Amino acid sequence: MFKTLKHLSCYLFLLVPFLSMAQDDTVYVIPQPNEIVSKNGSFSHSGQLNLVANNELLDEFLQYALEVLKDNFEGNITRAKSKSAGNVHFILDNKSRNKSKGAYHLLVGKKGVKITAANEQGLFYGLQTLLQMLKSDKNEALAYVEINDAPRFEWRAFMLDEGRYFKGAEQVKKLLDEMARLKMNVFHWHLVDDQGWRIEIKKYPLLTEVGSKRVSTQVGPRKWNSPIQSGVPHEGFYTQEEIKEIVKYAADRHITVVPEIEMPGHASAAIAAYPWLGSSGKEIEVPIKFGVSEDIFNVADPRVYDFLTDVLDEVMTLFPSKVIHIGGDEAKYEHWEQSNMIKKYMDENNLKTFADLQVDFTNRISQYLESKGRKMMGWNEILGQNIHEYQAEKDRGAEEELSKSSVIHFWRGDIKLMTEAAAEGYDIVNSLHTETYLDYSYNDISLERAYKFNPIPASLDEQYHDRIIGTGSQMWGEWIPTSGYMDYMTFPRIAAYAEVGWTQPKQKNFDRFLSSLPALLDAWKAEGIYFAPLEEALPNRSK
Image (cartoon, rainbow, N blue to C red):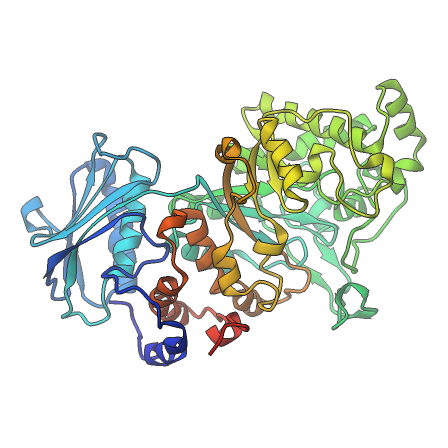
């Protein structure tokens, strides 16, 4: 029984024009489970849920289940004193039919609810399904149903950019709660950029003493070309203790936090703190203007490499994630062109172009991460196939080859580039900007367009489909100064992206998705999440 459903009738009224083709399913859950078998009959819980587990290893999980049900359900929730007294059973069974990570089996029958999985993550996802199935009226029954479910992709991510605007721990935890509700499993945390460094690095305190602050911020309706400034200082960063707390909070919800530490470009905040890191050798301030800065790390200087590996060492002590994201996008080469140290390094290492230099640098970082048992991820520029008009023609294709262990985060380019990367054996996360960027308006990416995105392009040869390991939705922060506006741009599209990552295409149906949405909207309302009304999220859909 989701609390405070007094606004539900309003949402249903807004949905009426969109539901003419909605399926008459007995289960309204987002993301849509991949196999649902409806049965005759129903289980009347009468507002009393008694939880029990078959394994003492599930004690912590059972406590979480108890708390989350109490937060979202107005009935009486208890831990059953015996198996026979329980009506919601969580069963850990390594002989479960589907042993894949996150898979679960949920059965509603005359004795109650039984959720079975081969791992705790599967039980957790089964619990999220149950939460959405519970009705608002405590006297209402759960229809008999059998669900066999597992995620389509292993990487189902939401990215938060805090390099531009610091949002804070409470906002991050709220996002993690909603990701958990939607079975998303990767929180991609963009912690540094030109306009701010948001993570404490103890060996280099100026990164936060200087790099986390800027004196003003570019604002205005013209966005990138705006000459207007806010005149208001902006600052903020996370201490290492705060990061540890957030990483644990995420792990408790089966979410992996993947940090992004940008290099070699998007480095202005770090260079403002330690000017010797830059290729120009000049002192700079943390930029107040958005866009692509020319400041770039001097990758030919051994001190810079030592700095970056020192930073990564501290990052790796905080984040147990197998993957570390190093950005690698939008590196401008002007300062490298003007550097004698860079030219000397390129001559000594037979590097013909600056694209080759970037791949050479990226491989050194990749090798370092591999030596620590980690894997490098970066935006698709790290392949050396530069995709920006501001690069010289000679720098649009590197001869140097990127380490095959790298994960390619594809955000820009055509199917040819993706096919080449897949053919070379790289794992790919598809976050094409025209389909997944949450800072884009609803006119550009409507809720329906977000829902219909397929991370495996129709034109990608089938032999390469398994190289696409998932997708991510990106909340870039340049023009998102407040948490309220971030909520508006993120919700409800995040629910669509959750289904993109979880549900097999043949099970997807947008009208069914809309019919499942009202309960989520009401839950968000209760949580104080300022979501976009459906008539704004669907601006071009016929009324």
